[in-house]
Image (cartoon, rainbow, N blue to C red):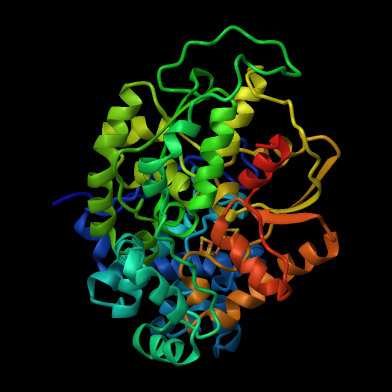
Length: 473
Ligand code: SF4
Ligand code: SF4
């Protein structure tokens, strides 16, 4: 019998609130049978809910916490013990695993003796529910981004899918069949996917376009010794991501051109599957493992050959660098890949600090209203996108650090659509208030969600596409 889900003993006086110890995070012991023990799960949910009720710091982050506090306030005891355990699921379903409560708010994360990891407790509850058959057919389809993308991008199918997704009768059917809200803005599919572009014409553009390293504001420093591929090495393999391949191939193309303009050797990862994030959000951990088994060997081989990995979607970077290592803590290849995965702007700014970024910008961007994606914020890399765009002349970037409301499939499901739009409202308001020349988000899905909320003819532009404009390429 394996040991129960660990709650490491820590001396309270040493690890109390306000302690100076660095936070740690326990791996997710999801293969332990105890992980799926329902009475133990309910006990842990009650323990953590009680602590959250006494704290309430996270009330503004998402709908999970207000749902919990409303349940408590409506109970006869006004405490968690008065909440029907059957209602715990109402809190769990509002969590889309953005990780913000853990990474930016909670003072009670390990090594604090209370040992709170709210997102991973929600993940455990979702995994238990999934194992019991709690996911609908619609949720399973929506989270199969690879399969849906492959089908929708077939040349004779793609136009029909895009047209149908904008036709009211079809959207009503779609709502009834899979629970997609009829007003949700569904992504368009492209027959000319990023992979097709790469196969047909992009490698020509991936050659460096400048004869020598362009002028830099900083002197070149001697290259440090790295154990894993680093931005300073100048070799980047792009993990296209389902969204980048099927829905936003222009973004991938812009990324390739920006990298090539910086004399970085670029290639696509030869073959890839969805990173697994949509399945994680559903609690389908065996599917996450399958995605890991499909992706990691190829990525690990690239890393061995000195390629850093870049993904244009923050959720996919987060999955590869933070979630998979916690789910598969004993998998050496997963850990090695995690060290070599970069956010695009993190990669570019590392090169800038080493004096290797082309700073010969040809165009100003003016004012940019920039939404910082939650899945990027929790990577704790700082505002690299803002700093990079502001290298362009006469460019001011206004950063908006609030949830966009999209959150994977949360913002398109009928069940959550109104709540998602409510979450988005302050961000849309700030974008309007900025009266900027451009707006966009590191997360292309969040950018589209904001665009939908703008309800005018304005268009979101991804920061990488803005960088390409600033370079004039
Ligand atoms: S992980 Fe995100 S969505 Fe889930 S409870 Fe925390 S802040 Fe809310
Ligand atoms: S997750 Fe932490 S910070 Fe947030 S409400 Fe619960 S105890 Fe407070």
